[in-house]
Length: 175
Image (tube, rainbow, N blue to C red; front, top):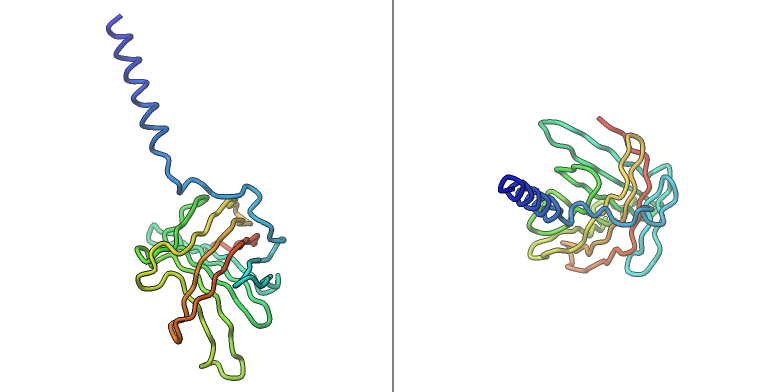
């Protein structure tokens, strides 16, 4: 009887530890991966719609030294959004914060006629705190889906761009 009580106590402790050790990193967001059509990144930038062209939208996973980096990018004719997660480990939530500059996102308005005048809004930035997140809801050998949001700051003039309602549904290349 004493052995049964000890076994029951041990099982309860194991169950408690197992259930309480889950973190928000396991929350990959919307199971559908947001509203992005196949091969695109969508978002609202300061309320204006952004949808990347399929031909310019990519996702790449590169592994080396025991670590994986996920890079995602999508362009229109006059805008671009890119996101990088160093230390990528699959489905989950990746917070954008000045505490971890190895995860970042940017919104770019390129100036083709004068590349030095290209404007870029980056997240995170100095003293930003938590400034957004990237949620991966599906990750297969050929596709990655999820949602994102961030607030980027332009280092040239300190303006802010809010990127909201972001979603991606991209083919992925693995190296």
